[in-house]
Amino acid sequence: MFERHEGPAALPVYIQLSELLIREIAAGRLGDGMRMPPERQMAQTYSVTVRTLRKGLKILEEKGLLERRQGSGNYIRADAGVVSVYSMFRLELLEGGGLPTARFLDIQLRDKPADLPDFGTSPQATRIRRLRFLNKRPMAVEEIWLDAGSGIVDPRKVSDSLYRYYQVHLGFWIARAEDYVTIGTTPDWAPPEFGKPAGAALGFIQRLSWEQKPHAVEYSRTWFDTDIAHYVQRLK
Image: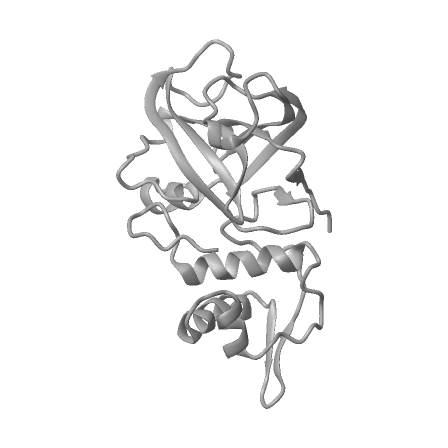
């Protein structure tokens, strides 16, 4: 289930595990007060070592999503407002949850085309195209444009979570975003692995994202397979 290859793209396995569990809690697949299986059994279920499992569970405990009871076990404490690496990733499997991963298709610094909305301060932006997965199932393609005024994305260092990359390598974080969800069609650059031919009807998300400044710094568009995933926004 988890990406184990070396390099900057994949998050450490214990973080992937914690993110998967956080999304399962948010989706209600792990309910509030639920007693989790013994750690050795969980490690076997997720094909990780007990040490890796415990590192992942520690993240949940630090976020208030896990209560350890001596002699009794680990219990879920649901909180939909918890911030995590993928807390702004709104696509889930139809059955709920799913661990997001990505494969980069192309990263280029380009002039902004005329069809993009007004954002940022530079006439150029880094264009990033990716194939997105949930639990290793290809379910979306996305195109992200990061304004060059906020930094240039280095293909050698870019990580699976772009928002994490922005914070670690470019020195800013995405503070808020606006999503516009409609219907679109598969772009002609989508790889065959995506499974939907060019022109096929898909769910379509456009997002403008802001850092701590008054102007948006990133624009993205995502085409997703509604046979596999849906867009979820939970309100507190």
